[in-house]
Length: 139
Image 1 (cartoon, rainbow, N blue to C red):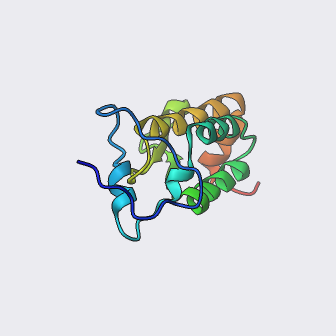
Image 2 (cartoon, helix red, strand yellow):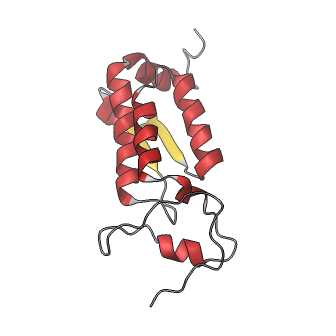
């Protein structure tokens, strides 16, 4: 039995996924007192716009900017770094969307795919990522 949320957020929220298809814990987040409901702002339409924007990233600075904005606006934390072994292709770049209540499983999959697509179109992003904090940074 579901309890109604005591007060609805003052913004449109994402519709719930079909039962059994997702483990986002949306209802638990909505019922938790003081829970961070920013992620619920990411409606399906907004998610499409986000994925399109991520696919159009042109530089590492742009990627880091989007990473900050995702955290500020939605509370979504990303970890983007070279993998633990030698990177010979984009497969060696680790892009992790940290789990959080309210974040749909499909969204956690779509964000890294969009970023890798942008890196495939703009290989300089991956090169700059590899150089970040290294010997050749700023050259």
